[in-house]
Image 1 (tube, rainbow, N blue to C red):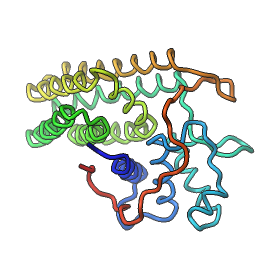
Image 2: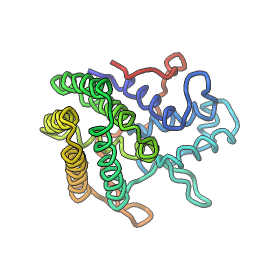
Image 3: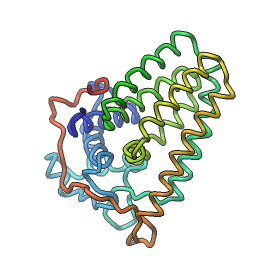
Length: 271
């Protein structure tokens, strides 16, 4: 089973990929952004929690300028909210925003799925099938953490296979905003089995070069996930300071969990 620390490292890797940083190109600013962003994704930092730039500067033994730059990067990726004349805070998603994100992703991924069915090479489809094998093993082990990160890898391969880099960039810009919700969705009873079934049907549609079926499966998958998340908002909500609504999140930990400097190289998915 994937540990919390391994999942944290996967979150860092994905953040660095999304903001376009690899290996030795990482700077103090991107290092801070990856650490804080991973703690938000992994729900170590709770939604709505203040991000104190003075405390963060002390933690990283630096001035507040790199901290502000890192938080601005995370604001761009939808993980941090920086209100005027107030402390930055971990982003709180409302149901309207979630609905917009999922509907946008569903539409874009429909186009991507159709392009994969029509344009992907046999080798690219074989890579997707191999990643599906990984997902099946993780689902059998009921390893939700590892399954989610492997599923993100599946969708990355899927976008590459489509050749539609414009759609990939837009989808990737929405990725970090949804990871916590996707983990929750996959943790629901029976959801891993449903997800595997969807992936199998999608792979068959690709192999049969059925673009219409592939697009329909992709849309159905995302709209089903959205329906489950909307139900969660209805069942577990409470008021926020700004008058909006936020999800009641049981079992969140408080306080930062750091990823060791020795393990900060961008790598493949943790086992």
